[in-house]
Image (cartoon, rainbow, N blue to C red; front, side, top):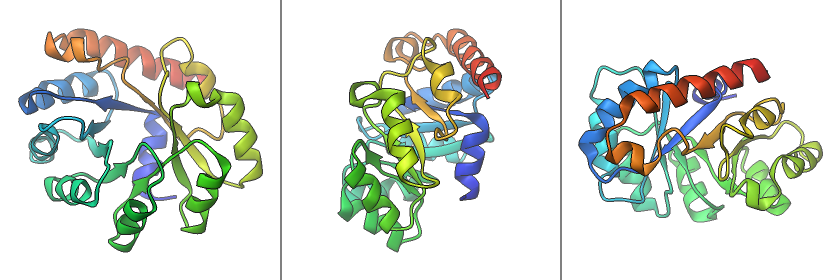
Length: 211
């Protein structure tokens, strides 16, 4: 397994972050780290994404930086140029996946059905995002698809919360869970860094007990 994915697996959770203000990334990163989370996926759902990645990359924080909701190869280029270490897409877009592979860029493409997993395996990938997790069948579907496809690992995202985190984290097919519950828009906008730290710490405790 790629060393970045191995590090993500050890942490067990990926905060999926949407920022309106790029300057919020540094206090947010500190809050996550204080709660035991050392990875962040900054989504390209706003214009602040690339600048936020750049700020975090050039900071002193020891945190893995990913770019999420990547929909174009231009997004890929901007993310990597800013400092992103891995790419996450909501669906399986062959053009984007092949672009990343051909340029040596780590990617976890979105999947929700067997044919998409087969396309990933055909390209030598062993980690995929499962999205939207709860709406697509949740943990039972992950177990069913995983049983048919060897050593594939999933990053379930969508509907993950403190209530179901333990169930997902205990599944050997799950590399890590993606979630927004500790980095909700309202928490970031209101700069509730202590709350984010508390939620992050609780998530890490749940994951550690579930494994």
